[in-house]
Length: 462
Image (cartoon, rainbow, N blue to C red; front, side, top):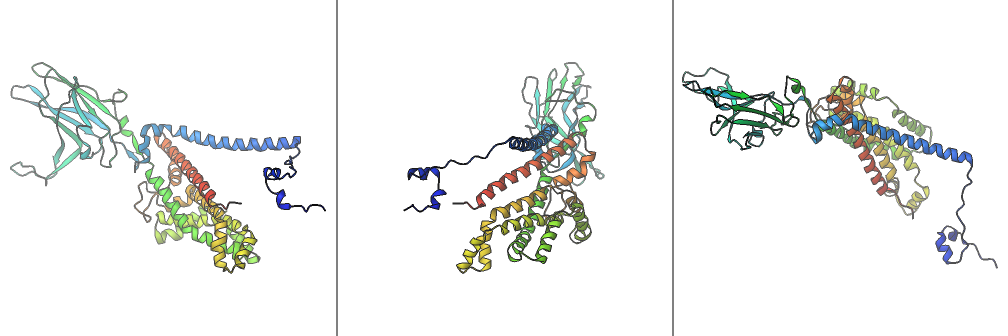
């Protein structure tokens, strides 16, 4: 009698069947023709070409943003203001006095800044006075002042009639500067302005006292300590701070808030059209409408939000998140619906056979099985929200400062680039390009994170 064939044995790995003496069947190999080789090589060439384009975009952004990164370094990512003039040292001079015999003495040093400084940053570490023997000259720091009201007849200066001018630092040594000696002053970037921004560069300046009767004072030129180049004219006063933190915060805040608003609606639409209302003319109309909403230009959404949402909520982060959520719902809902419709009917029927309700089937069967696909739709919508430009630009308020909350005006990376790129030049253009690179990296990081989560959520086949 012929042995009954075992279909399960055919599907088992070859090594298991070999142990039982089963006949091994080699894996069939497809026939290879010249047209197949051409087709395979074409696909490979297209794939490599696309990867080279992406790599070229990254490299071009990297080199275009190099001047900004060289100028600001990591402070670019922590600075909270944009296009603000840097504080610089305008000049340094010796405070002199004349005694009864006509001799001139050096009583101190006055350092004049372009902008007001934070008094707490002025100390012996940030302003160092040395003689040319590298001995540190100890002294006290003070600020110049000027009266704002008429001083009383007794010439007493009180706190009520003076205002301190924090643009100038006065350094008074503990012992007078010695004649026949040379001194130098190091002014370091640790000094911060009223906005807590550091000084634009390290400066150095020097002076000397002669042994003559008149004790003549010779002052050196102010130089940049790092390069030794003389500070001339007002060229260094045009330098500005550019910081990415407000725009990175605005981008993430608007995108994440839009995602939180849109997710309940997206999943509800996907379950309704993918499970409850699958067939029929009305269902097809809803599916088509949902897909058409994804193709509406963002400028149309922006106009609608500008005329209907801004009068109610104002131009702020919440309004931009609201219109973003409306824009990304079709993306996540459409993909999630397709994934839900692909859940095997056998699994759902088995759950119904065990007495599960429809809600329990959705919660315990459909969502776990289609979880990775649903999350992929959410990730696609999040990527759309990160890069959205025109609609956000019209309703976010376009304020180049850190957002105080969801109802404050702000700016995203994309909206800032759209507003300023056409008129930018020099370091501002490089800073905008660096922001574009930051947005590129943010999108890539969230993409990789999404792939990891999708892998964890995917159903493994036994």
